[in-house]
Length: 176
Image (spheres, rainbow, N blue to C red):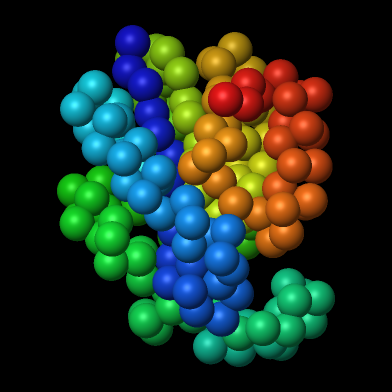
C-alpha cells in the first residue's frame, strides 16, 4: 500500500508574505522534517498551491478576503524557498479555491490502481485549506485513513487552528 503526504499551500504569501503569520513561520522546520521523513519512507509527496488570477479582488473569495495573494506567477505564489527543492520532484496541484477537486480525483484514481494505506495532510491554513482538502479527500476516499499533523499546520489564528483540528477529529480525521 502506498502512503501519501499532502503539503498544503506552503507558499510565500502564507508564510511571510501578504497573509503570513508568526505561527506559519514557526512550522517551517517541522514541515521540512516531515517531508524528509516521507521521502525516506517512500511516501508520495503532493504539494498544493493556492492559485489566483490577477483580478482576485473581483472574485467572491476576493470580496470576502480582500487581500491580494498567491497570484499565479508572482513571488508570493511560489512554494517557500526552504521547501522548493522538494516540490521540484513532487506532484504539484494548483487550486483556484480552498479545496481541490483535482486532488480528490487524482487520489481516487491512484487508489484504484494501488490501494492507499494512509493520507497525511500538513500545511496552511489549518482552518481554511487544510480542513477543506481533508474533508474533500475524505469524501472521495471514505475508507482511507486520514491524518492531520498538528505541529505541521498553522491556522489564521491559534484559536481557529484548534477549532479546525477539533472539527476534523469529529469527521474521523486523526490529529497527531
